[in-house]
Length: 284
Length: 284
Image 1 (cartoon, chains in turn green, orange):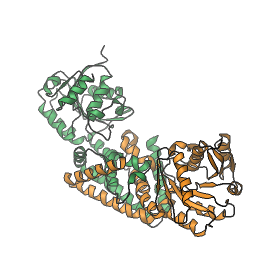
Image 2 (cartoon, rainbow over the protein chains, first blue to last red):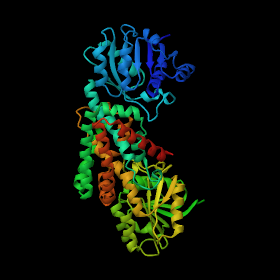
Image 3 (tube, one colour):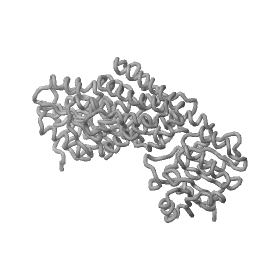
Image 4 (cartoon, chains in turn yellow, purple):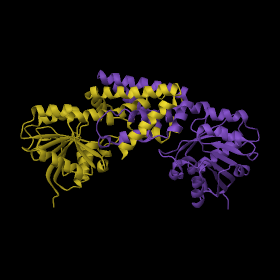
């Protein structure tokens, strides 16, 4: 019996693509295929019965796929779609998992024919490791899933992607424009990564930090172990939004620093109170 | 049968003091007493059989205590010791859990008689909540415990405190000078708190952040929910060390910002590589 009446292809079986495959496997789709340049990964996914079949050449599975989920590095997504325009099944829904959206969504919509529907997606899920071996359906559990629709998208297709995300375990499915997405994500995802890297690189001590750290340092540096190629692309593709929010953050750090230097507990307490209120809002 | 042949008094049954009491209870001490200004908390701890008896007036338990663990706000610790010089049992070991050390250790050693031994301590354990109701012995499990001995401390007493920390579940017991402690902690504990508060306060978006955040934002802002009175005291008491390390961090943020603005992926990749190496060292 089929619960999910679609042929689905996941393109790129890395951490995110592999996690999609594992989550979708449990939803019992008509067929679940995967595309990757690494045959060993495809074989491993086939052996584990996570996918029905893996392909190095994408043309064959694309021809029969109702839904294609592209989990490649952002800069590769648009080219992948362009190159495969003749291969996609008419009516196919194409989505992605790139964590920046304006550039990808605009580029693809500039050339995609009306027989295909590209719907930008961004599951706010991940790990500090990369590769299929770390893939896990659990990353979606309770996660936020952002969809960035544009006018030309078919609203039924948007619902299909939203429903799929929900079934995969995501808690909140949010729809927002690609431009607003990139502005928000500069703050909620990219700035924390800039901070983690900068914090770790500020170690000027001659001691073994691991003996002098507690939960706060560990939590704050977890994401400093970063996939360099991916994140330098993400940062530079969203540089205007990111620089703007870094400057706001620098301003706040500077106020704190000056209050600490002048032992101005009044300003510190104001900043702490403000932070307490903000954190409560976020954690509600 | 007694496993820990000491009368022990915990002063201040908040989150940290309460956690000490719960951890020490399991070690089966001769007597475990507590001092607090809040009678309800003392009663709750007595009812739960965590302490043998609670006192609002500290003089009685101090007279018979071999070990006194002071879990008060840092600015109160020195005064508590000074005021109780006549009450402490001769030969008593007095320790604390304050997360800044130079000022406390130097002040107390300027007036303490040679019949008493004050040994500075700092369990690198805590929670983002305050109060006895959140106390838990589990906060010590696997934690770092820093002891800041000075020349006049009796080495046998240092061993007793180290051994107690180990039995409570702490993983690494580290001995270091109070001055070095404060320099290190400015980086590993105080800077992360400055960052968390500044990050949360940099929210200039008009959206509900909780729908747009993933694990990185949540991890990084957990500690932004801060005990204002405690932390403004901690920051201003260690302002010289803290300002120095904030400036180093600002320098790193600025380098990242400029690289992002100019889309200089070479510099970004260097910083990411450096961070990856540092994080691996810390997590070994």
